[in-house]
Image (tube, rainbow, N blue to C red; front, side, top):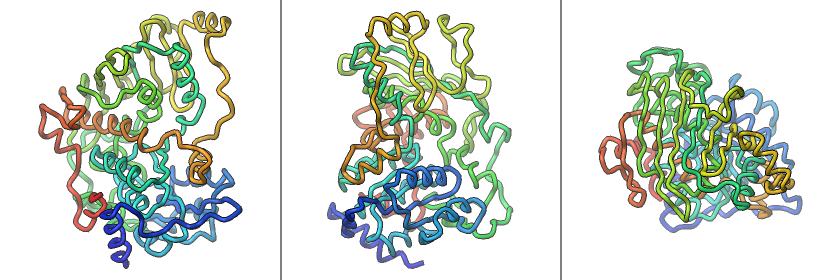
Length: 447
C-alpha cells in the first residue's frame, strides 16, 4: 500500500491551515460525490439513507472486510463504486473526486479517517459518538473550525421533532429551571453474557478477506482476532468502544445538552458499578454528572442508569404507566417531562397538565417540515442548510460521554476543571483522556 504521498500532503495541510487538495466543483445537477468508510452493519444503513436523499453520487466504498457477508449489501447496491480496504489509499487515489465522506467504522477508528478527510477539505458525516477519547473529540472540533468543512454526527433524532420541540418549548418558557434528569437504557448488551473477562481472546484464525492489522488502526495494543471484537462486539471493550452510555447517550441526552447549554460537568461520579472490569464495561452502572449554573439557568445534575435491572426511579406522576424503552425524566421547578430516545417528543406529566397547556395554546405543537438528518447533511454540503449536529455542537456532548466512560472504567468521584479540561483529583483518569498512538498513525494527532 502506497500511502506516503497523501500522508505527506495531509501533514503539510495541517501545518499550513488549508487543504492542498482542492474540492471538486459541483456541477449543475447539484449532487455530492460521496465516499463511504465502513460499509457493514450501521454503515450500510447510513449509506442507503444518504443515497435515498437523491443528492448523492456514491463513488467509493471502503472497508477492511470487503468481499464478505458483512459488506455484501452495500457492494451489491453500488456496483460501480470503486473499492478500497484502506481509507488512506482511497484518499490517495480519489481525493479530487470526492466531496464528502461517511465514517461508520467502530468508535475507536472514527478519528483518523475523519481527520484526514477534513484536512483534505472533505465534508464529514461520522457516526456517534464522534470518537472514543476526549482528546480525539477535541482535535476533531478544532479541525472542523480550521478547515471550514461541513460536519454532522449521526445522532439522527437531532433532526427530528424532539429537536424542534425542545427548542420551541424552551423558547416559549415551558422548559426552564431544570434541576435534575434521570436518563436510562436498560436493554441487554452484548457483553452482559460474557461474565468475568480477564483479557483479550487469542488464537482464533482471522476470517478470509478481513485485514485485521488495518482494523486495529491507531490502537497501540495489538490483539488477536476474536469474534468478541469483530463484528460489532468491539463496543463492549474500553479499548475499542464506548459501551452503552456512548452508544445511547447521544440519542437520549442530545437536546438536553444543547438547549440547556450544559457544556462539561464539574464532577463525574460512579454511584453504582456492577461487574467493573479493566477490559469491558460494567454489567450495570449509575453515573452522576454535576453541572454548574450557567446563563441564568440553575445548577443541575444528570443520573445515567444502564444495566438490565438497574432502572431509574419512576416519579409518582408516572406510576402505573409502562416505560417503553430507553429514555429520560426531566425535572424542572414547574413541570416534569418524560421522553424516550432519538426523535421521540416529550410529554408533560401528569398528562392532565399537558392537556391544559395545549388547550390554552401555550405549548407549541407545529414544528414545520424539516429535513431529516441525512438530507440536512447533504443540503449543508450544497450550502443550502446548516447541519443540526455539527462537531461544534456534538463535540461537547461526545466529551460528556467520554468522561462518563472513564468513570465507568475507574469508579469513584472525579472532579473536572471545565476550563482546563483536566481532572483535578485523579491522574489515571487524566491519562485516559487520551490514548497512546500506534507507530505510523501519529500524524492524525498533529493538527
